[in-house]
Image (cartoon, rainbow, N blue to C red; front, top):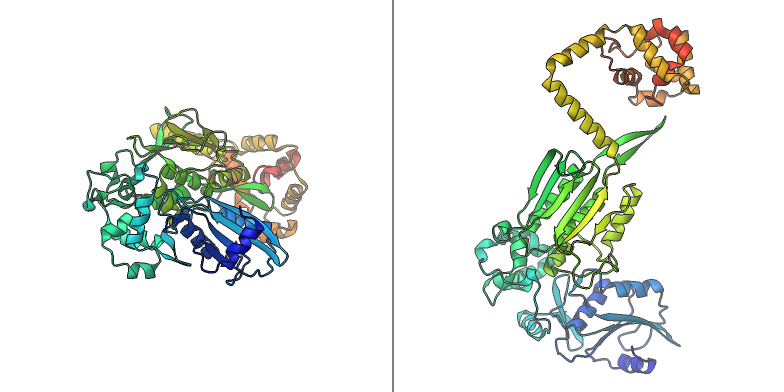
Length: 534
């Protein structure tokens, strides 16, 4: 970094194109634009550019007090996903008698053009501006990085006919480029596609990224470019298949479908009894966590293989398995705190579309959400060098077990309709004394003070209504919101396989048990009567 004397010299050099001065501490767009322009180094001076926060346009200091928060925000410009490819920069606080300044030193990038939110920013003398077509060509030619990633390589067997140009104009471009810029852009469509690395002008064909993002039928060209979803009834692949889907098509469409599928099909929630007056929602998989993992699967997978990405849902867990293990500088010992991009064009698009946020934070946020929902931490498997696997446990296995049991019982009843009819007749024929004995025997010694109060009121008035009973025990507000005496009868009916013929459907009165009141009081069976089983 610079010394104090060097900083003073640069501050006083008003027309130096390598210097940007500002007194603002909140103008993130201005900071990012300057960083992007210095990284592009259009004049090819191969010298660092400097952004000084806390300096006036005339070079004098404004008396700023630099905080740790400001320094963190400036350092975050490198990796927040808005400037791609990521630039090399350093941030430092320098103190002078007149005040502090924050210095951001930006190294010239070897991989140009560098873009901020899809715009190629450059320095034109001491002013900043947006690169035109010729200036972008200069930046591409001076780039020292000549090895393309797979999503930037030309897809030689394709042409413009393979691209959905309406989708590109209406849904893709507006997410990247300001509408005013789009209106003033007079370039032909191929040049617009090429500026976003979706078209290769040298070979006059779309790139792999172009086919994946705005292609009409990517699977026709890239055979493994889809996600295979399967839901199994059990805990392994030998169990029965309950649901199967294939997500394919261009990523603009497919990402939206996956998003909705996770939110409305994968995630389930149900109320679970906590106390007499409170329930809580139990969620099997938090939507945001599964969504983040699915988006990472799309963004980081290897598209050169013919194997699909796999999204398998078992009764007790979800497993995601995508082709391609850790990439570049990311290793098991620094995952998930380091990031690298196998598909930078796809990553940039997903950032612009809002499917991924701040880079290098997604997995950490997923772990926090899973722990909060009581799923436990996601487990990542790096042992297979050809695939990347992650497992998330189900936080509501009980619901899955109940659903599986109901399904199996339903199938058995359908297979044996005669037996089912006989069972109903047998239940109807049971003596109510025997049934009540079973209920009271199980409920003994479980009675609570409130439940005893319910029993005493029934003893005084066997014809008491649910609302009158509610007033007597002080829970009228709950009952008036829809919680009636139907629940106690339904609880007993479910527990002992009774039918509506034994306990009549007129639940407004509890007189259907008045003849058995002495037996219920004797065994304290009222614990089964209100709010379900204790």
